[in-house]
Length: 271
Image 1: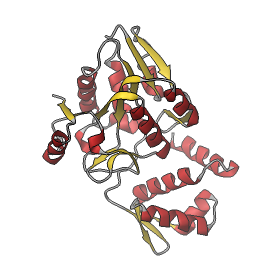
Image 2: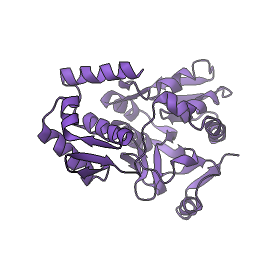
Image 3: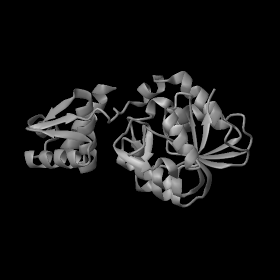
Image 4: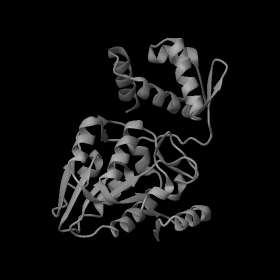
């Protein structure tokens, strides 16, 4: 899989598909993985000028996504690493199954819901097979696949551009499809939750789509395991107080539980 992804990245560089947003995203991930990066290495890797790379690093330093150093940059310890969909599936898997079962109890027969892409929402899809009347729209390829044999669930796909690392669709086509509907609930997975950064994810276009999901739903439910607290990813979806319900496990820090209660956010703890 790594070899295929690397070849795809080379292809994007060669034909000019990798825009500034994608390049900066990859620079952050590379910095997290290696601990530090150098301008000269990034110039060769992304086939752009040193001026462009320095501009990227200065921008990311201003956004507090890395720390600029002489000749390169180093990682910020508070920024979480993005996992592949396979790695996400393995991480905290038993907890995610419990979270999914608990979250399924927030859904009622006859609901029209959005299921965000992700490993936890894919587990949630498996818990929906008992429903006899449900509409689910998703931008997650793995989520839709887990609903193939759910006879009582009508499945809608957003369409769009497929991001292979996360099996998720994004882009204008995905946004257009969401804007034509109104939903009872939007259920979002997240990569990080932090008092200052709010609810965050690694990919800018995914954050944009998540914000749109919030706007077309009556109720917003976030589902995450407690390892995501006090961690921030690159792009903000919304503030902690801007969701209606949080489904998580008993490992949630007391400070977050108290904050949610003060702000009228329902907290649901999975056994």
